[in-house]
Length: 258
Image (cartoon, helix red, strand yellow):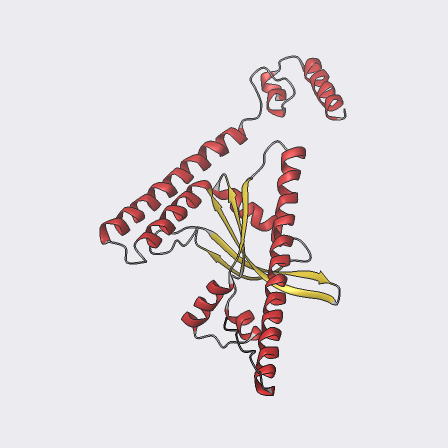
């Protein structure tokens, strides 16, 4: 039975092997920084969602998802952008290695969540692209932000850039459909489908506008018609007896203090 001859590695081969191991180690550490940064952003948004759920009567955050680019995906983007094969070049050229997506109910919620997140003292806004006010030519709408968050490691803090996409349910549904179509046709999408996508994007925007209007109307309702505690129900023109008006206001204030 033949036995495989041992491979005799020279000094140059061993040095090259050590270099490859070091590159792999450095790149794994590099990606880990982005994972930690992504987790920091997810945690911050999750805290906001839980606070709204338990302490407020309305929660603007419907869903949170995240993704970290694979080494293969990063390599493909490096080739498309002509990026040098170095950690620093990748860091400065590819800004969507770590991504967090937040799905909201209404358009106004997207801006509210953006303000709440970027208003935190350890978040630095690097760039904002508002595709809600200025949709892409294909109909894509979303609010994109590049934010920098510190990741505290054993050897000190590391600033990490994370791409945050904030969109409504309708925007997310459209973007998911568009991605599937482009993937199926390998980005060579027939014209009639592109026209259909743009029409669907217009429909989604109209739906968002209608839902926003209905939501605003509901939010502006002061109270149920039989609720005597609302300020609108305490207008002197609706209460003939001044003493009753004072009593209602007193009872309202006492209830507010409970």
